[in-house]
Length: 222
Length: 76
Image: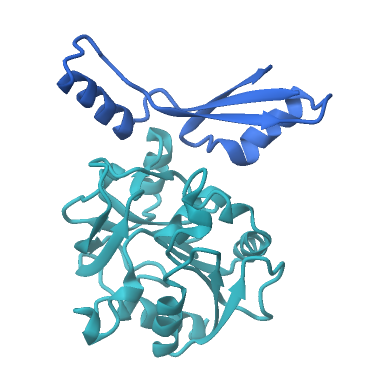
């Protein structure tokens, strides 16, 4: 399984993401935001966390206009897999690949702690390593993770079972406790919590391993 | 020519920063502040003859996230 991790100026979870993907068995290459094309035969593009372009204008807004993002949108439109974590989730909403937007946390504070998430369904490559209803602990570290989508959008997401993860105890004011949301074809996932920071005993927990392993198992057999 | 773009959260979208400012004004003793909405003003220095339609495209593509924000253009 071939994965590409995107690097923007200000990304800071790109190497963690690469380590997590490699540990799960992926062949990983790093791609720079100015690259206009992804490496050949890439199955998964991971858009990592960080503060791309200093969060200027809006989190993820400038990154979403970068040459590599055009290639990512084309990859997704061809049915390719995309995982966006934290700032990566913000970038994916800004590109329009995922619905909604991430706003300032309701309590206005930067939140950096481990949170419990409920896996809403195992019906995607990203969540196939879990069972629906599992509760997992991933760290969050964000100032703008308050997921917002209009009533109509929320109804659609819920009806299509596209909420991948929900906060057990909502830290940031996200609508319907949404922590991670899938695209219509279930091949694009955006989430604020960091699975790549929960893959090693040294992280304090390994609940994120199943996400990467499940994803890679699905893509290898696909 | 110059243009000014006002970007605001859409009505109905909760503005936590505006709420915090409202509370702070209240604690300073300013009674009667019933609501605060916080937005952005972006000033553009443009080549003469830039059309409002072009500025509108700038807003749609980058300056505002129309999922949650509305914008207003003022050509100066």
